[in-house]
Image (tube, rainbow, N blue to C red; front, side, top):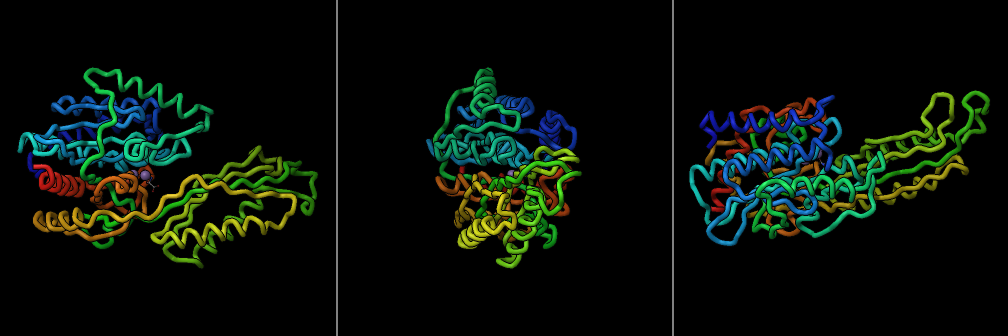
Length: 407
Ligand code: HGY
Ligand code: MN
Ligand code: MN
């Protein structure tokens, strides 16, 4: 286990090196295919090659670092390298570098494994730059590709992808390849919520993930003069949006207290103080362990859009994410339960409220996740924090799990 301080210093060094690559205005910004993202994937490839791993990059910029085994089975671990805007240091990156640490230490202590050990750094999970989530793991696992998307500056996904990926694929000794699906996948990740800290558990053993849906709602009213337009003669898109958001939030509470409802993004046009807003776009993110609850709430959204008070203000909804609830592999989970016990780690079984690449990987390979506590339950924010002892505990359990599977 990570007893060797030198090994722990190496982990911290790698972590700091990648953290510093972000244009750290507030928090971490490593949006897919951005220069920060290219620099991070480049650094990761070099970390892997420095310890003798075989580096592969596919056409979506997923990075694979293999410790070849004696047969053709593959045991994989990994997470995503991208971040939300102004995100935290640990979401995604902890699973990538924690996975590399585990493979590094297993290689040093046990040599060549029976089955290949693979560390995967998925290109994109968050959907922060382009309105598509899990594009990296969906490309790898489901051979799905992204079509006709542009970012907020009008840069196409295809242009950003080809520019960034050609750089990675031109690096020394990088093999251009999308490797085979592994025989199992384990993702190490921060919990991003308050439950482990509240229950004082060191480890979360994840049995599944809630379903999630994301929508863009467009409210089309009529821009007009803020001073001369009588209050009873307005088609104010923002007023309609605010009333709609409050009504939907109330209905979400009424439907189920475990249904999460979030409006994370809202844009007003023309967004100047002396013009009545003509157009408003906002996002809705809903999540629940039971897909029928999400179906029910989607009906509520569609009904509510038709009940807008002003007949001249039109409201439309477009769903761009529909991810079903996922159930993870019970054998891997019970193996990790035993290993946690042997390591003297307090662990609890839980369902993830956050989406993860493991949702995609669980559709093609036996999959499980290992959570470590998030201080204050905070994530997707600059003050996201997991303490070193918890970081180490997660890596140690991952190491034990990969050793049990691959050697
Ligand atoms: O939004 C999520 O659940 C994940 O952190 N991408
Ligand atoms: Mn994540
Ligand atoms: Mn995230």
